[in-house]
Amino acid sequence: MSKKKNIKKLRTQLKKGHQGRRRSGDFTREYNEHGFEDKPTLHQERLNGKGELTRHRTVFGANSSDAHDAIDIHLEIKAEECIQGRVLSVHGLDCMVSASDGNRYHCAVRGLLKNIRTTQRNVVVAGDIVSLKPELSTDAGSRNEGLIVRVEPRYGCISRTSKGQQHVLVANVDQLIIVASVAEPALKPNLIDRFLVTAEQVGCEPVICFNKTDLIDLISLQAIAGTYGQLGYRVIFTSAEKGTGIEQFRSLIRSKQNVVVGQSGVGKSSLLNAANPTLKLRTNSVSMDNQKGRHTTTAATLIELGNDGYIVDTPGIRQFQLWDVVPEEVAGLFRDLRPYINECRFPDCSHVHEQPCGVKRAVADGLLDLRRYESYCQIRHEI
Ligand code: GDP
Ligand code: ZN
Image 1 (tube, rainbow, N blue to C red):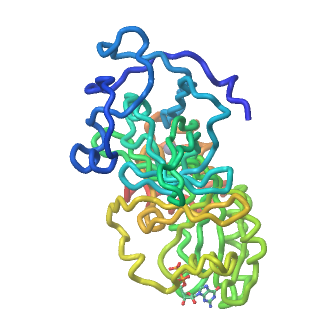
Image 2 (cartoon, protein in one colour; image 1 turned 180 degrees about the horizontal axis):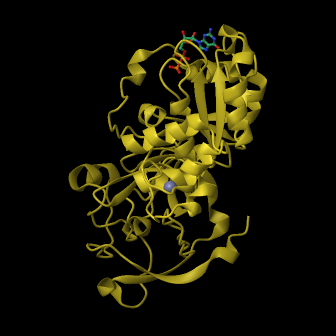
């Protein structure tokens, strides 16, 4: 894969405290003592001319202007020494990477990468696509180790902002699988709408999965499923119990990085187990869903599905809705409301009580589904 066309020279600011000193030592011990951000870094790069005084460094990379502030550093790396991989989890300084050579590597992050000034808290997160340089192990038969030298620009970031810093929980999410049970627990269309807003905001493809279809007559789903289908959302019907729709579910998650969401008890784990029996996820486990409502920062972990697919597992993400959405954004994230927003009189129209309002007129004219509009009002109210 050629990265050449994206690469340009750019000057980047290094964080304060970067002294360019050569320092050897144990990463984990240093992390425990000094934390991630402020410690002098272990690195072997040449400082270009100005020695220890330099505060800027010329690096090669795409200065991505996208919202996620991609970090794409390409610094005197010999491509033939590196392999690509996907970060499965990050624990302190230890990143577990599943590499294209079929091996897993415990990786540290190259010193310079950590010093790039960034609004993001984590330079490397679960889901990142990285280049790593395998390191020769000192003792034979030990685990594979490597150094992450490059992080590809991100898309599909699920993140949370705290204290002005974007905290990416997981990057490169392709698909949000929204699991809703049609009974036991009862269908909650408003919850589906919330997750759709999230998918639109994150910029990943949503799939609406109506599960437990063995418990009802499918005819009763026609109206609601039809509404979503008309909006261009992919809708599937499954029964993890009876095995219905599992083949379709399996092919949907193949070769993609998926996040599965939905309230407790709708059958997320059952569906995943049915699609991939090697997963052996616990079902009916209320304890896993106790995180609801709490702003848990449980680190995300990717579960490999084989065939290049992944499921993102974290109790926090599974339950969390509406990451970082502000009220003014919501209407634009409703596909069906979006076309009518221009017709409102006030540019900051909330589409709830103003007159004249393009959205409300569309509802009155029967152009907009009333239930979806009510769902919008409720979500906006709750944010
Ligand atoms: P999760 O909390 O979303 O992961 O849900 P689980 O997979 O733990 O399932 C919750 C309960 O619903 C379990 O008792 C499952 O056996 C049951 N269940 C899951 N899928 C189906 C289904 O398609 N039909 C029926 N009748 N029950 C299901
Ligand atoms: Zn309006």
